[in-house]
Length: 250
Image 1 (tube, rainbow, N blue to C red):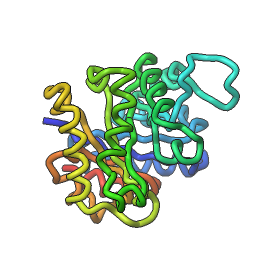
Image 2: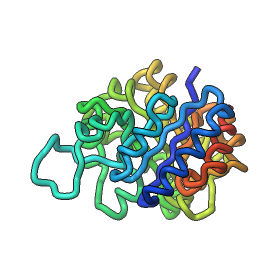
Image 3: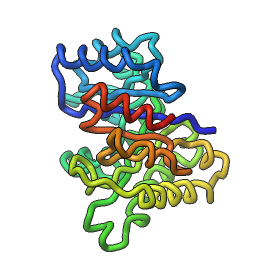
Image 4: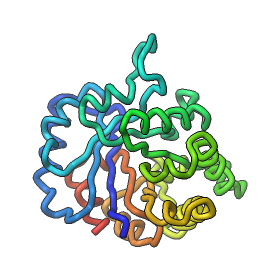
């Protein structure tokens, strides 16, 4: 049975004091979250603080992106080995904001996926469609093409050590959420696509839903057969709300 995973993407939010307060709030409520796996993705400057607070708690942490190169003249960038130095387990690759705002196309995302695994990290591959693409009926084609870029570069076996996050772009930070039925349909399509190549991998990989997940809708979303947890944005910045989402995965 796939273990549920709830991950908090803090994006470019936080200060030393607010990160400490947020982590202490999450840690105080861990007893209520059962066997749900929890991960947080802080801004890079706060990784050492998160590491110091989360060490030994069962909470995992990771980077919000990485450069595909192991080192070099890439000002402002971080590598997989740098993230590993802070005991990161996960790293996000291909988040829609990286694709839209920083020009990371699917080829670049696949290179980051490969680099993450080469550096000992578990990539969380983000895929999803815009509102225009959904309204045109292209959701599964768009998501499929995003998956194909990684499959062509890394092969299906790479998904033995990866997580997928389906995040409809039109539902991120907008307050709009895909209905549980809409989300399940896409999650099932992702799993079916992988199953054509390897049924075992398709059956074990965790596929998260990301897009305005809240404590009030988490249980309904996570109850669907192919939704294995959530990639949470704004709601992960409030410890009580985030813990409520984690409880929704029980």
